[in-house]
Length: 284
Image (cartoon, rainbow, N blue to C red; front, top):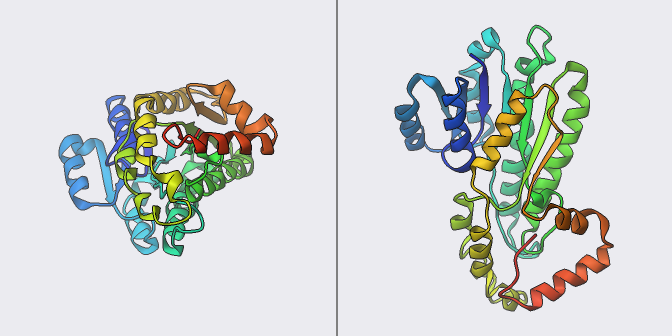
């Protein structure tokens, strides 16, 4: 039985991946922040998984919890690490707090490096183990910078860079590293985001934020089902030569055009024009 380690399995992408992988005979080591979520998952999946409880920002707790599964990994190795845990803190860079910015980086960037490095020996940097795979759940926000979503975009750009660096550094061990770059996905992140920009309505940016919840609702309506991501995860696990990047977007050509080919100043004007419409605004 092959071992899969997934961060953030209480809901959304992580939960769907856990469910699907267990049903396919993989053994999953998952992480959650809350003990009540761990209890629910243990009741649902029994001995088909191990659920660790820690906040990825808590270095000591993270280390202590992962050490619990090291004996298992020492015996069996690790087939794949899926770095899924992440948060989105919307708001203009001028006004989000220092603590919020640090939290965004801690969860989406620093914890990924920390957990990956702890598990690398069992993924194959220790050559007594077969080379494994790493899947980082990134975002289109790691490719295109949307206003009022700056800290999230910065964190996902950093994750994209980290993915590339790990892939090139770990190639000598045969470890495959891929990033999945979803656009809007039907997860709890949308409900958690609604209303969060209201605190900025009295700033100079207030008029442009009046329809933020409308934007979130529109994005939610066009979002992909979470199973689209899970299907790609399974494809990577089954592939001997997985792709390095998997973009999930309904308008891939248009997105790539905006993100990579059009001049910056032209894209800036397009964004400004869209923002002026207010209720039509939504990030790419």
